Length: 274
Ligand SMILES: [Zn+2]
Picture 1 (spheres, helix red, strand yellow):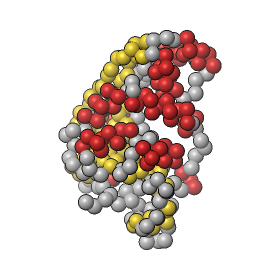
Picture 2 (picture 1 turned 90 degrees about the vertical axis):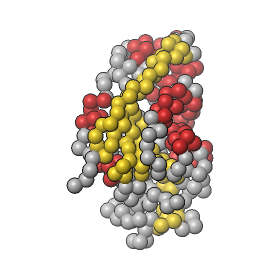
Picture 3 (picture 1 turned 60 degrees about the vertical axis):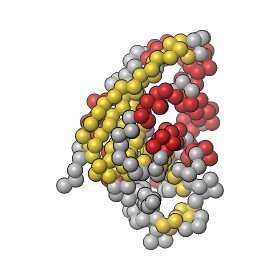
């Protein structure tokens, strides 16, 4: 099996990287070390950004519990939508700690690659899921893979770079984009943040991808579950990161609540390149 080829991220180099013992090297002599846990950090100085609250250990832990717990059905339903995808390599852009990608690989097999800009997230992904390929990179700038490398590109409440997604997906491949639906966490937003439904993101997402992709299918995945106080705290922490003191007080006052979890999932096919 041939592996998807990584490309050099140094400025405009973009030449193929070859794997040596503990590093990747391009023909121009740029090299990247393979970390002890097996992932590769391809970030360039211009890609680095300040630490966000989202990178804190507390948020990571909350998100991990949410994905494996109250969101498990949502995640499972989402992965089911890839059943019709052609076989081949899968790329998850903005993969975080790799929860979705690991499940995709477990269910469908095949080569699996995850990209995230957070070193901490990729380090955790590599620790938790061996045998998959993990890359630290800024996918907003450049998705560091050769053209037509993937049968599936996924962006699950993650980053969106239509031009680059089109370049790395195969002609017969699919693009899966999942965004929070307008009623996601609506009960919690009303009682804690004092706001109602979210703006619908489907229209904007479709417009964003229209030049390179055609929509094949739109599914809304929705589950309503009774959550206890601990689960509600985790959900809010992972979705909103920093709450104001007044909001935190309202959160603490909530006992149990019925909570809607909802995603709009868009399955796209690439447009032919002329
Ligand atoms: Zn290079």
